[in-house]
Every structure is written in structure tokens, then in C-alpha cells.
Image 1 (cartoon, rainbow over the protein chains, first blue to last red):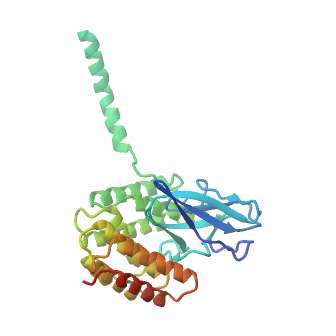
Image 2 (image 1 turned 90 degrees about the vertical axis):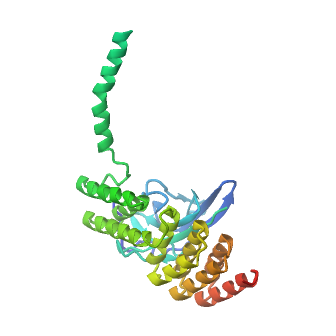
Image 3 (image 1 turned 180 degrees about the horizontal axis):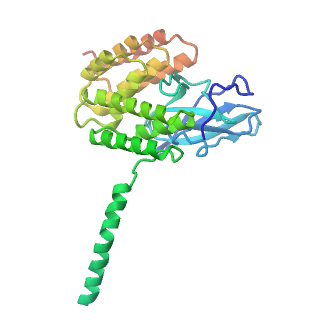
Length: 114
Length: 206
């Protein structure tokens, strides 16, 4: 299903802490976080999950305002975005890449080799 | 015994055309099912031709998926995929025939980040022929530009490190260090200068 872009999300300005990496034996995990207290559904989409919101839904944290998900990723550079109640939103704490193809910029996460 | 063997042979012969037809119709690419069949067929032809030219096909599939998520019209998705294949084709000629898919993708990404083609050529020429280190250099350059470092400065820094035979770790350290400094409020150009000096200072003189 196509997500709306250019729409104003009721959350207004979004906040995030940026992707956090943790190296483990043979794998690196990346934790994505987004502060969106009024959202009902948040997902992360990107090159690592075929841009499919159903594949990586985020979970609301115990504080009720943050949404989190930890994803195992191979080393590399990935474009990604959040989908907040059907609206695309870049990660405010990560570098952005312009999208000349479809007009909606992406966020970038770089996963180093362990 | 002979009749049983003959029956098995006949069964295999009868099934063979079915199996061949199934193989011919196989779509080996996971293009989004929500795209019209004609669009998927066009993307499949494009991916087939890319594969024949030694171009990785995963980025084409991902581009189509990204387009679907962003609500792009099928024609626009095909245009974006064609453009991506053209970019891969453009860098394919700059690299060795056996260049790794990772190096190809890194070269395309550095151009997409805004690096001029001559700067890419300089960085490739400065590499020692080791795909992994060269790809790390290109990834670092793309990320530096994404973090706000002017493209010419990013290319110059990476070219310098590649000429000095800096290891992959040094290139990744440059990228990560500048990203941290910028995230903490530092000016991208100044962060690059400081980090590059630190890395070069720790290397043996040429």
C-alpha cells in the first residue's frame, strides 16, 4: 500500500535518537527509535526489508511515547524511513539522502563490519 | 522391470516440457505484486538485461519496492529503475570486469550522493586494486557528502588516504568520526580536516 508523503503528521515535529549500533558475535544489530506519543502505528522501512511496513513494525516503549525496534543488519549503507500512521517520515536524527526518483528523501544508516 | 523403466522414462519425457515451460516463466525477481503485470514484465526484462551486463539486480528490485511504498506511478517506477541501471552501466565501464557488486553499488551511491564523475574516477585510480578497501573509501566519500562535507573535499580526503594505502579501518574511522562530530554540532568541513589530520598523523610517512 502506498504511504502518504508531504502530509503533515499530527505528531508535528518528530524526535529520535538516531540509529544505535550494537555489535554481537557474528552480527550487528541496529536499534531504531522514534518519539511519537500520539501515533497508533509506526514501522521502519528501507533497503533491508523491501520497503514493506508490514515486515518491521515498531513497538511502543514502556514510557508510552517512544517507538523502538532492533534489526539485525549486515555491514553496508541503507536508505530507510519511518511510516507513522501511514505517513512517511525521515529520521530527524540521521543524515538524509535526497530522492530524485520519487521526491521523498530517505534517511541513511551506515552499518560497519564487526 | 523393462516395462517399469520405460514407464518412468515416458513419465519424465512427458513432464519435461512442463518443467521447461515453468522455468521459462519463472520470475526470479521479487518485484512488488501490487504492480501491474505489464510493469512487472517490463522490470523483469530490464533486470534480465542488467544481469547479462554484470549489473546486480537487487537494487532494481529495491527501487521498485521503494517506488510502490512512496505511491509512485508504475511508469515513474520503470523510469527510476532504468535510470538506476544506466548509472550502474556508467560505472561498470570504470571498473574491472570482476569488480564486486559491493564496489559497483558503492560507486553508484557516491555519484547519487552528488560526487562529480571525475572525482569518482580519481578515487578509483587511487585505489590499490583491493575491492573491499576501495568500496570502503567510496562509502566513506558518499557518507561524508551526506553529512555536509563539500564533494570536492570529501573526494580529496579519500583519494589521499587511498594513495597512502590506508587500510579499510582508517577509511571507516574517517567516516564515523566526521559523522559523530557533525552529529555533535561540528562544522562538516572542519570535522573532516581534523579527522583526516589525525589519521594521516598516525600513519607511516610515504
